[in-house]
Length: 173
Ligand code: S3P
Image (cartoon, rainbow, N blue to C red; front, side):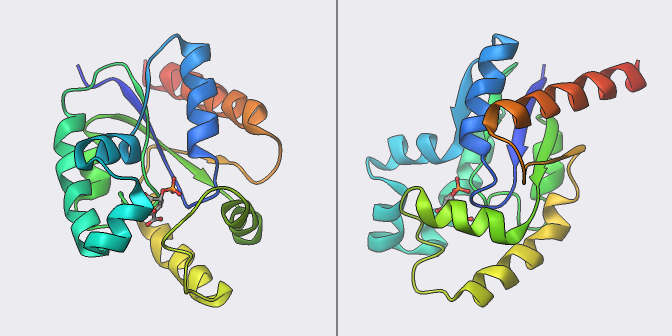
């Protein structure tokens, strides 16, 4: 049964750290699409971008969507760009409950610059990244649930996600 919890959102939203805490609290396994892709390719995401280019990475993301069909009951953090193609939001919703970690661009951008190497930020001005952020909103908005991830640490945001999931469960029942 496709009862996964799938986290989507822009770089710096906290998908990985929130996802890890959420999985622990729910007693579920945690997986990240970027890790699945790195393992398959035998290279880190920045290495894949550098040697094979973005188009290649996006094609492997497409395959990763197929691998996710084998998952059940997991918490899944997706790469920031994975939901942002026609048909992808619906494909993700078919796998479980999709949670958008939404929030403020400046906060996410600051966090994304601080943590880890992110090929989509390299060589782009802040205004260009802001444009990407807004262009992606229409895809993220197709999630089942939206949780603000601007303020508070990952623990707090995970708590907000849990509340949103419980509320949704109650409404659906
Ligand atoms: C990307 C986000 C990254 C990673 C890749 C592309 C994007 O994941 O998948 O660098 O297009 O926004 P995070 O959202 O975890 O940084």
